[in-house]
Length: 331
Image 1 (cartoon, rainbow, N blue to C red):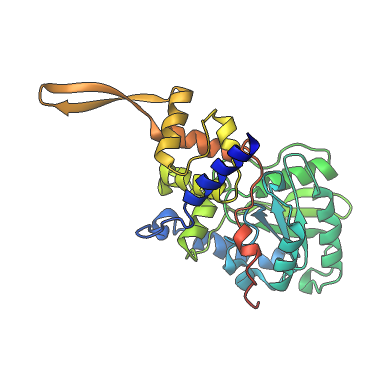
Image 2 (cartoon, rainbow, N blue to C red):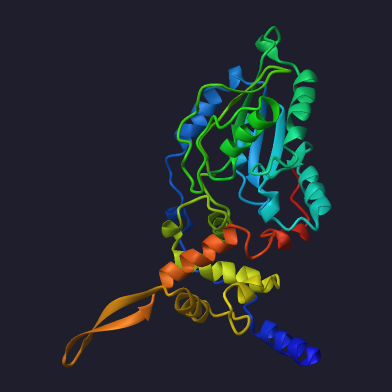
């Protein structure tokens, strides 16, 4: 029986797509172009800052970071916080670290800010970096000022709130949401620690003005950096299905009670919609007049598929797995 199941899975896998079709997809249309204003504000605040904490999604540790951060803010000590580690498959964590180190990133911490995992490592690392760097005109100031940066919806505000819980035993200082765009302006200083006296500047998420490839754009969108409808819920659900199948992460089959793994997004969404009761009335024009037909609501099913993935119910995933086995470019 097991041999039969394995044979069926192998046959299905052989029929799965090896590449995701990206022709005709306009990445530039997905990402707002107004973010340069936010980056300029960050640059103007640099003279007040001792260190930069860049927060990024641990599911895409090697892609999607804004290269302009390093170009324009790179004169300050830098810590890379890979957040949402609970949603990421970190079985190859050492490879991720080695890959990033070859790109010149030395100070890397994986965190889960919802449960405060590894957050306590941040203040000692920042303190050591600031203590060993030249602070210019801030040398006489006992307070440390840290700027928190990153693309949208990676957990910058969650990190600030987690640091406050850990070091000040205080609650939320910044609003947190599951959609991009909650933080819209460079805020005033927020205290997160007393010893040393450390203040953080929360900043709006800023994406790169040009996304390197359609697939990078799809990865960013899967992680919630842009609103789903800008890319298309069904397009995102299709890319998610392609990714899960390619990495043999078939938890969606059991979660939705499907008969088996499938690589056709229309078939999967139809079964998801029927199972969840997400149906809709559609008027169909016939020779005798309009007829109301009940059809699966594919968009609603796609939203549920994406929400289930983002909540971790389909298991941890590493969207950059292929990149881990590709040598990085020289920094």
